[in-house]
Image 1 (spheres, helix red, strand yellow):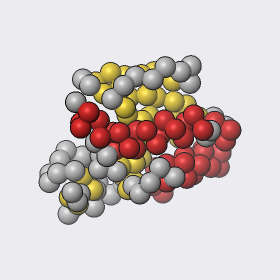
Image 2 (cartoon, one colour):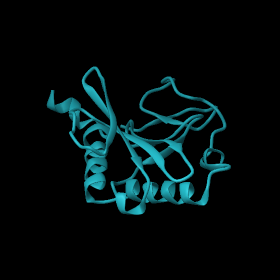
Image 3 (spheres, one colour):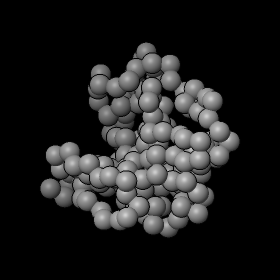
Image 4 (cartoon, rainbow, N blue to C red):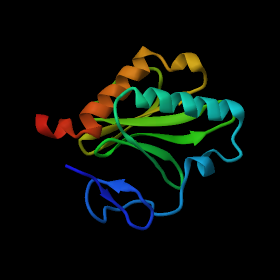
Length: 144
């Protein structure tokens, strides 16, 4: 199933006219004024996401989301020496690395702050691959 592209902003969405943050948002604008450390952490996260498989990068007003069929992960904030990210799964994971885990219906949004390159490790990569596969490609719906 192909994605619909918003004619106004170019956002790729699962269905026609799906609600989204429509505007002239770019990664460059999102990273404007950020420190070199923050930009490097962002770049490392993008590289980790790209290893999950083909996806689109979808900048919005307050975040940069990563999308397979749906948005499965995001960088929500770039601080001076950290980035705040989240990813979505249909089950809750337990780890001291989570700043918080939000429960929305049948989904769990796992929030992580990454402050050092060493934190882009196998554990985080595995969580992101799982989110990409299960939530990003909507496989969790087939299990229900």
